[in-house]
Length: 72
Image (cartoon, rainbow, N blue to C red; front, side, top):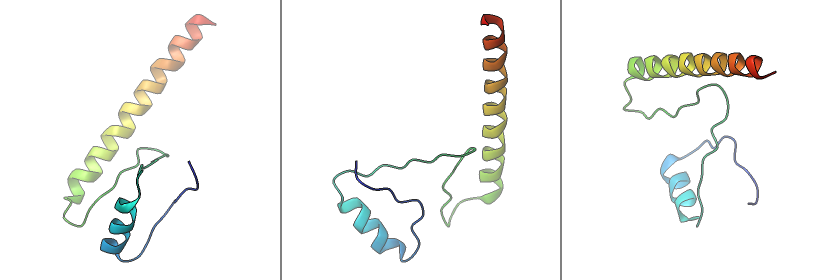
């Protein structure tokens, strides 16, 4: 894989056309519960979903830590 794009700003239709013309397009969304919201998104629902995802991730990590402590 060559290169990386972290943030792309500008004319969305032009950016979309350029990215989709590429033979391989992928998104690497690192961080704490990353999400993409479009103009027509219901922000209240998006925020609720993101918060719930963060809680689930935290619960999962807590369980992993507990299981690691048992094995060490």
